[in-house]
Length: 316
Image 1 (cartoon, rainbow, N blue to C red):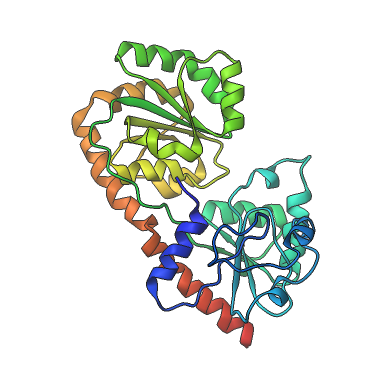
Image 2 (spheres, rainbow, N blue to C red):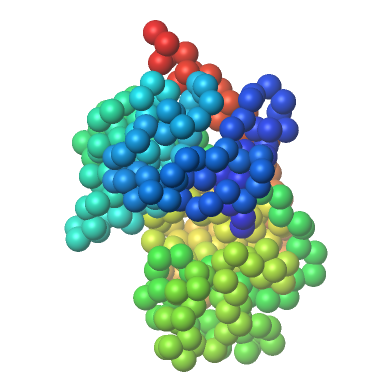
């Protein structure tokens, strides 16, 4: 549902009380308003290992630097915040590079930012960190147009393709029974794998997720709990009832606003939410109220406070 760092930067800019310097550590500049990093293409492979030239020596004077994604460049004097958006590399035994990268950055004083208390506990356990080294701030979910006449069953698949494949035939039968369309939102790589299994559905790449959401009568969010449930929250903001697996992060962020289910309850819960109008109305109202917590303006206020606190502590 868009780029959360871009949405955050835009909301921070709109506040008018911060001087913002936008930058890209891996990809080239896309706007004249973004800072130019000399020899960026040379240094970015080093930054993916939290090594190389200190990025604050390449920029105008700053109080805080906040990065997300694969690059975690060192800094010489300016405090560094690193958003940890994906927990999968911390879970996989054969993928320790990300763990070593983050440990190296934290060892130099970087602070990690995660989206939930559940994520903080997991990162603390994986990296043997103390609580002050990790802060919880929810990322923004950008503006979503209300869905008023959705008729499709939209399924978001994030890092749990096996569960979707196991359900696919039942979801296709559900769509046929209710004379609707099954729409699957996933990354391009996941879509390619799902098509190879013979699943019959309309596939939509995640970068076009807003198009799918505009068609939705109900959203089924299938994930492994390793990432922030941005699509589920976007559904709440659009007024679309959502079902999600009862993972720890979903219980923390979606409880009371979405229908949280265990795997063996999926089809029964979907049938109920599709046709139970009083239940749908309750979740629509609760979802819209909850989604306000993730609006770019509210999230920007939380981040502005975090930046001020980190900058102040760095001067002590």
